[in-house]
Image (tube, rainbow, N blue to C red; front, top):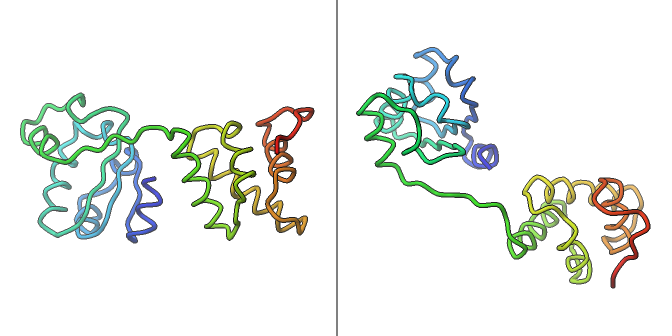
Length: 176
């Protein structure tokens, strides 16, 4: 999701390791842009993060920090950094449920110019993993299947793609 946000905003995606390696002049140059830092809790103890938060705010940039845990649980020794982190809005992104899966599946298919009929969605919803990665990978492979076979997205083609991905048993009967 961070990479998608960066693609949409023209921003820069950084892992915690990449952020930690950046020199101050490069951080200053990034401050006026959109920047996403993944695994931000791993750089939370560094003074560079506080400096970058301040620079981004002053330069009118946008900063998106991602972590597996809430900033209140990060090991932060600087009271200033703790205060900054506590003042930031927090959003928890949960794994998709079945309704979300269906919406994401339709959106992923649309990005590949595929129209999924209701019976295809009904077939896929109990079979696809409830992860964004699985949904995106399936849509990409289905698109490739449509292109290479010349067939429309259908239950039989979806079944073939799932089998190729190892997500269904080859002898499983398709449902209509």
